[in-house]
Image (tube, rainbow, N blue to C red; front, top):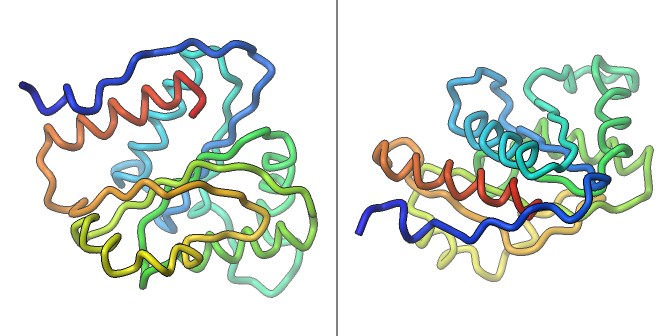
Length: 182
């Protein structure tokens, strides 16, 4: 049995091309060699091959630390979120919560737009995922972002030490979710 088999899912095509998905790379470092960026690429490629409309928002490319309300990219980020029907948010776990720039973005957007979006959340971390789930089970509120309704986050643990085959499995799974618009 290969490592890919446990992650293989039946592929369903999108029923309608009017569904709009925004893929949010919540890593503060926008470099494409980050695993968060690869996961976003895989989801976005899957969504496009599944006939979903998709766009991308890279939080690390925004300037959010400035006190000015019109920081670079905030208007574009707000328009992208308004455009979308659904969000896919990928970020690294930092001190048991989303990185500050991602939380700051959603805090500011919640003030400007009261509508709530559903989202799939994928969290990468250095520790084993099972250890984090066991330690933080009662504290799922730490993954919450204002204006975002999420289900259970998907945790990818030991991200710095997983094998190339395991990375490939995760990328294949994320790509399949994109095809299905999950």
